[in-house]
Image (cartoon, rainbow, N blue to C red; front, top):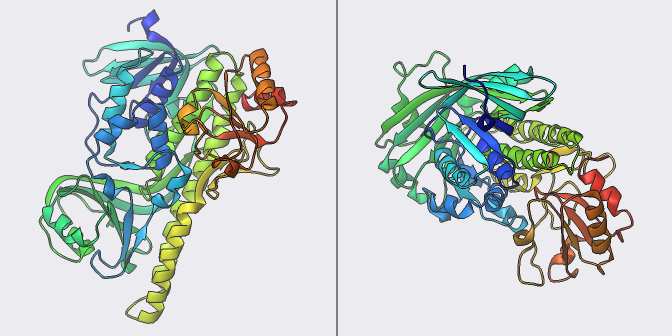
Amino acid sequence: MKQASASNDAPVVIVGGGPVGLGLAIGLGQRGIRTIVVERHEQPQPIPKGQNLTQRTMEHFHFWGAEAALREARTIPPAYGIGGMTSYGTLLSGYHYDWLQRELVRPFYFTDNERLPQYATEAVLRQRAAQLACIDLRVGWTCRDVRLDADGVSLDIENRDGMTESLRAGYVVGCDGSRSIVRERAGITQTRSDHDRLMVLLVFRSTGLHQLLDRFPGKSFYSVLHPDLDGYWKFFGRVDLGSTWFFHAPVPVDTTRDNFDFRRLLHDAAGSEFDVEFEHIGFWDLRFTLADSYRAGRVFIAGDAAHSHPPYGGYGINSGFEDAANLAWKLAATLRGFAPARLLDSYDAERRPVFASTARDFIETSIYRDRDFLRRHDPVRDRADFEAAWHERHSGARAEVNAFEPNYEGSPIVFGPAGGVSTAIGSHAHAARAGHHLTPQPLSSGNNIFELLGDDFTLLDLADGSAAAAFAQAAARLGIPLKVIRDTASGGREKYLARVILVRPDQFVAYAGDTDGADASDILMRAAGHS
């Protein structure tokens, strides 16, 4: 085996160069942290998944300098957004309502949502990573072993030709999927919840299906509730506009590619026949997994290595990107020396309970809610009762969009409310609230506040400037990078309901209140993990 050379040493090695790993590398690279990314696939894998990118995720792309490129790579016109439709029985049954209307919360985010296949997203991120000299992307290499010691982490990697190398890192992050070797070698256990369902993934081409669904303009995905499925979905999604689709559905446990009529499955779900040309047939088990910790010493996990769930609602890739944004600024702050190593503990404290809530309170709850609905209401048995309940579901779908608002009220590094917890359940509001995402507002200069937020902490002073001066002096004394913005509490900024707001590098609020700056040092130290 080759001995490690200087070029094989890095403060951070990321195993897994998919979207989450690349997003993390870019977040580190933009802050000057040298990173080696080990990715076994030489090209992004052409399986359509992770397509729904929320407004919040697109904020990450804005700060990563990749938003414009991503929008140019879209495969579906913007008018289709990431909205969907739920139907009863079949797509064409006549019973349907709009679902996952994330456009309803658009005013609370700086960017519009986007939709494109994960492989297209990954290609854009590879291009952006190549522009940053701090990122060393090793494609075609597989991690074979990870060894932890008191001073760092060693990794053995191997390419397709059997050539091996050793890497040395201060920190390692496993972004290597649900079968993560990094998680395994670090001894991080998982809690698993199986639903005993074998699911099929079909990728196929059909112009006829596009024509059938012309009657539902602006929709990108379509779920079908059927009483035989007991709460589990049949699910159609567009890969592009007009020809390529993917489809998920439960199938019998003994199903193989050769013993099942997948064309009939598609036709039954749609309620009509149409042309079908299969491009891919694969299977997956419907289960939820959550790592029991996101950290083991100098090793971290993110994305599917830390958590996985069925592709319901587009939560997966968006959760992974939030992991990356959260961990990037904390690793960089530690490596740059203005935050202690214990700041890194807040990654687990914030991100793990939020995903647990996402899985429990939104994804699993939706399965159980659908199961209960299908058992209680049947249009054949009582049409009036069914139609009234169906209408009520539509209203509930709108409320659910507002309720999904991941926040860190229970984090040790934010000034959240007493008894607060970190959770995915919240409510969108313009008010600046500690532990919550900052909402965009215009500044007197004509810029939006999000155009001026930087890679480090930002203080927004909407009072007389005394807090701004005190925070600037405290930050200089503590060595904590801080950008100060002064403005007035008008022109929309009064909606923040706070005169002094400390914003973290990931655009979450660390502190919101009316301090005069006398406690500036304490606020900054806590936000940076010093106490």
